[in-house]
Image (tube, rainbow, N blue to C red; front, side, top):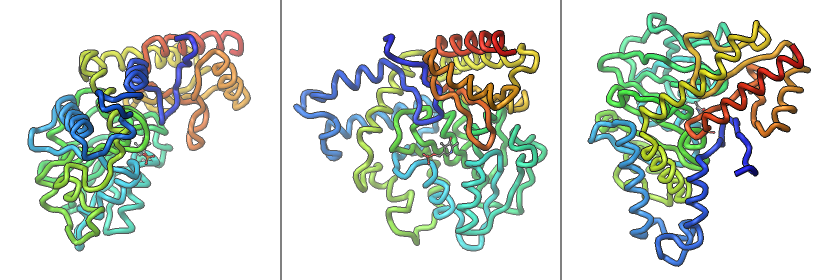
Length: 362
Ligand SMILES: *Cc1c(COP(=O)(O)O)cnc(C)c1O
């Protein structure tokens, strides 16, 4: 489809074209209801089937233990920053946060409004150019949970190996790399992700929850702020973002039909490799922000020799059909977000564009 660009935006982000085509095909009349899925009741059998199938696909693709629950919530990943301490940072307890970027920092700040928090490690000193080494993490005496961010969307860093803390619950914000590579889901007690990066459209946040952690939750909260409410009601206590969940359903089927997480992980390595290689072979024209052993496969951050060149780069890239490459203001420069749905072709085209741009301007 020549009217499509390669979309490197950090989120909302590119979706698989077959998903968009399928949604378009069945938008007019969903499964012979004579209605669009947008118009179907969230209590209708046709919708409940979609949601249940989406839950099961998520558990299957994440390799989650069978008793874990999948929840569909509103408010974005940012609302989880508050939900988590409201439910699990109970009076008298303390929670530990590992600060590896701005979203981790926001999660920490939100929790500090609710209870006692400890910074277990931070890489702020070097503008979050890496994730902490495992031996830099210092937990407090008996934390209610440890929170980390698996992929730092703004800085372009990603944990290569996750810490393990025996009996302390581990909570992870996986908004920007959920289902990008195999993980051992049983090592996490709560995983959350805003859908608009690697799962689907904006408007829904996916939560994977260990019932053992849920058992410790504060139930002295408004019902809408309790994870237990979502568990008990299968995320149907109130109206869930039905269309966003439906699109996730299509994305997960696309992922499964393309070999699942192991296959996409290989493709993600290949894609990121094309761009990192171009950076590394540029004799310093392109400078990566992330230290090499923390490099993200999802968000690639790099600078050019001057801000003028960075502006020219973004402008010319756009003309070449490569959009959304401007970096976040806290890092500057460029950022290529190459989530699961970005085709290899997009990364090849970007790598070629980078080489040409350097030839003309280097
Ligand atoms: C985008 C992002 C968020 C914020 O998500 P919202 O859905 O906009 O609240 C949080 N954490 C990470 C890692 C992100 O990439």
